[in-house]
Length: 233
Image (cartoon, rainbow, N blue to C red; front, side, top):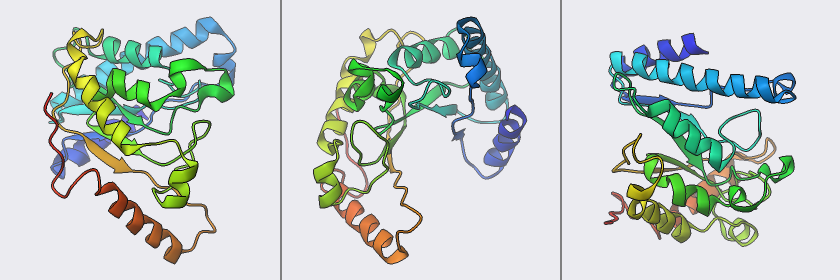
């Protein structure tokens, strides 16, 4: 995977793209069954990301992204892990680009693996870390799953994601960022891209899907106009 990432940096830079991202790691069940091996894997991921950040800077990139997930095999999947990774991947690494973590508002479904409390609320993830991430994935979903539904009246009635709350918690994150433990290691961003990640079932027709995407775009434009929304904090 590291070789793939390095090659992707070169391709991205050639295309004029300044940053790439994805979810790159996966811990095996055998590793997760052993606390010492899990910690070793966590330290290895952090060290590799620090090295990749240096490679990224040398290849003309300005940031390197991973994505926050909701199962223990794909880190970070807790608020504590997110804080740890943002600090450990970025502190005292002046030759590297910032390592940032994309936040998905539907990836707070760790209840299936025993998580509870703030870890299960997208509002808390955005409040604590929204200021660090240019890339935020939007989906409509219930709080116990990651459905990747569109933002249509039927799904909005069933789902828990409120766009006004998303925008307000991002603003709160910026207002309080100077007091964040992450602030000493990572500067906040000055722009956010809210990207819809709508994943339909395999039997949904193209006609239905396109209609839902059109409706989703119209709904989101109630909150974010063409050309973007300026938030002053």
